[in-house]
Length: 446
Ligand code: FCB
Image (cartoon, rainbow, N blue to C red):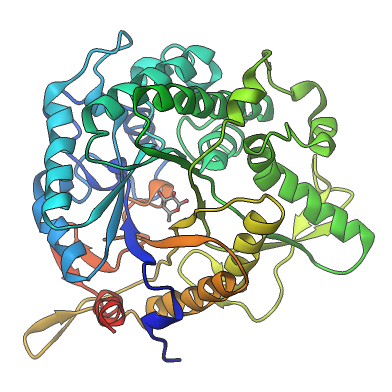
């Protein structure tokens, strides 16, 4: 399949995304404090290869070179996250100037290269000094997030126009507190619901305060969206898919649109429901300037009487092609975008993450190191086509951020799962452009 950039509108933005803990390293430098991810990685059996983000891509020291990679790939924008424990030293909100300086330099570097910065305030690295007080189970953390957000907007808001409060609230809550494979790693649905509530509250508090701090910045959030299809046309399977959708998607999207928590799910969760104070739901629903959607894959569900709280089991159809860690269904991206547009009425939509991982090898050809990642090129093309179709069908899609600029610390997958368009040799920190980066460069030039 051959595609050209002109399937997208003229000013469509192409970018790439990363997050602080996954790339920065320098975990103990310049006054950075530990986060729940430092603590989690240093516990036994949490990360598949026993690794951590202590060094990661050493981006903290190599950011200039990394920004050059963005530029040479002809990308317009870069989505990165700020490490809260790097910039704020304690619960009283003391600013760590050295940490802040890093983000000043990074922003300078982007603007010098004419790359538009999109910043995420929270990509899962909660300061451990807040975890000691209960972390996201404690409402004080939401208030602290608001204060941190305001400080960042005061310091960087003059040069960064686009601000994302949270990345993937489902992961930060359910995956972290119920399923327990992410920090802080507990297995308790009630805790997950409380964490999700306080995270969404922190979003609302931040939006409220950021509006007052700077009227000129654009505010959004980046939920992950998982299309949930029924395995058959039976009413039971449809209900199963709808329930999963309630747990993963509607639980966050409905409150953002002022619809409160979905009633069918409230009934299922029963006495596990979180503590909700008056005014909380209103804060969560404060208007946004844009919305992100992180899309990777889709799931299918069948009704199953023995299938736990939600009475369902996952059942993927035959024939999906596979990456290292997921199956691929590009049309799910189209469906996601259509739903954000028609059912939720969102405009100014960005795909804030989409990408794929493969097991890859470096080969040397005529003295040049190459990584032949045809799978990733196929993945990019298939998803570009679906995004372009959604625009044609009326979705107000403004940009597309690919995950990720380079291989990095892939959470519980450590360094075994490579999502980068640039290969990273973690022994030497050498970056090698994969074929997908070279393809993208040409595509964006076309
Ligand atoms: C998303 C995360 C991102 C990265 C990709 C592969 O869920 O937001 O940090 O791990 O998956």
